[in-house]
Image 1 (cartoon, one colour):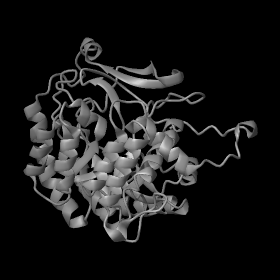
Image 2: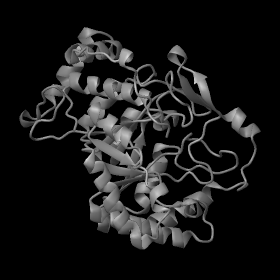
Image 3: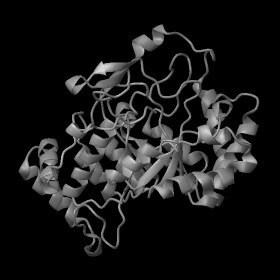
Image 4: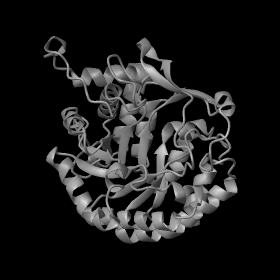
Length: 389
C-alpha cells in the first residue's frame, strides 16, 4: 500500500464537527429528507430491546454491535494509528506476505507477534482476509494442493490459539478480483475501477486455459471437506467471499460463486457452525438477486460472518464502482437490515475511489476514500441508533 500523505499545517482544521447535524445531513440525502430520517430511526430504535439502547452510536450494555473495521497490513503502522484516530477499533489483516516467509511450525509464534503489533496500536484483530497462505494449487486442483491444505490447516489452528476468530477467503481460481480499467473518473475526478466483459473477452484465455465450473466445484468441495472440521475444532469461522465479478466464465475459467443458490450449495457441502459467508454487498447486488432477501435469509441463519460494504452501478457484464454515498443502493437501509437480522461481526468499507493527491498504485485501497466511508457509515449508524464497536 502507498504511504499516507501527511497534511500540511495549512490544510489542518480546528473545526469540531457537529455529529448530530452530520448524521441528519447524511440520512436526509440517503433516505429522502427529514421525514424519512425520523421514520427509519424510530423503526430501528423500536426493534432494540430496552437494555440495548444506544447513545451517540455507542453500544448499550447488552449489545456491542457490529465491529467497524479496516483492512490494515501488519507493516503499515501509520495506518494503524490513523484507523484509531478516526474511531476504528478493529482490524482485518492480510497475512500471506508474513506467513509465506516462514515454515508452518512457526505460524503460531509469528501470529503472536503480529497480534501484539495491532494491540500496541489499540486495535483488535477481527479476522484475516485473503488466503493467509498460498492456495492457488488448491483452487486449481494442481499437484501439491495437499501440502497447501496442510499449511492452511496449520494456520487455522494457530488463528484459533491466538484468538483470531474469522478467516475470509475466496475461490477465484487463476484470477482474483478483476477489473478492466482502474482510472474511470468518478465525482470530482476521483479514480474508480470498472469491469467490461467485452474487454475481458478480447484479452483471451489465461495461462491456465479453459477450466470448467464442475472442476472448480470439485476443488472447493475437496478443500471444504478438509478445512471446515479443522476450523470448527479451532473455533475459527470460515467466511467465503463471492466471485468478483460474479460471472462465468472469466477469460476461460469457471466461476462458481455467482448466485445466492451457489452459497446455499456451499453451506450444504459441509454443514457446520463455522461454514459461512463474507457478504460482499456489491457482488451480491451484481448477481441480480434481491440482496435484502439474501441478507434476511443468510443473516437470519447466522451465516453472514463478515460484511464488505461497497456499491456499484451497472450489471455484472459491465459495471463501475462508486463512492459509498452516491451509488444506487440505499446504504442506510442495508445497515439497518444487517443490524435487524442480528449481524454483529466485522464490517468494513471496501473498494473506495482514489482521491486527489493519492497514489492509484493499489486501486480501491487508497486511504482517503476509506476515511470518508468510515465517517459516512458512522453517521448513518449514529442517526439510526445502531450500536457499533
